[in-house]
Length: 262
Image 1: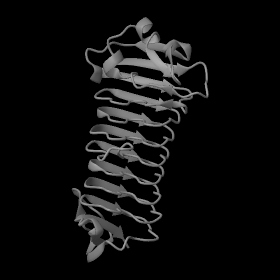
Image 2: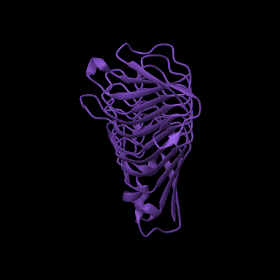
Image 3: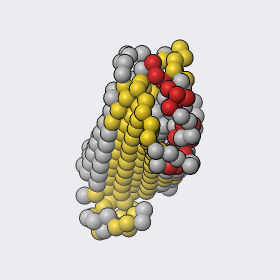
């Protein structure tokens, strides 16, 4: 295993972009080449070593045997793990926009909070956010029609508005609460929220499954209750308790399933 440790040495309030700090780009590079990797500081090109100290240990015969460990303050760093296809990235910090966006494989662990658009349009891999994330996690980008299509996102804290917007596949698990409209425009995939939901889950949903284990203030009128089930078998596992099963959103001729625990 090759470990590339990148530590913050100089802070800036202007966003930095890390979209090329990836195992597949750096696994076979020596330290001096990693130091000189181009990053964007606002609209200006800089080399990585301007703001970060790099250390390298071990070797990797392929990018899936490479770990990139980010230590320090990354709260103004965008696109961490964007387009990741293999390997592991661990971030010991909060992160800015687009962490894990369009990733197709590999594993990202954020030991902090994530800004908006986490896991945007991802198609594979695993994104774990130990803290909270803001709106539009697993969504489509502005002007696009399809969000997340595969992979898995686990949020151990709370999620913001429009979780899984236009989701077309994959899984999102939220251990905490979620703000309004999770699963809006969802056409496939699976969302599970273990905490409370503010209101209006799965608006304009066409297909897929949404499970809410906590309390919800308001559901949409386009969902029709068809049954109450004890210990339903959903997405490959039994969910213990009594769940009300709804189908909709009928306003979009949808046939999605929403399960709400009593």
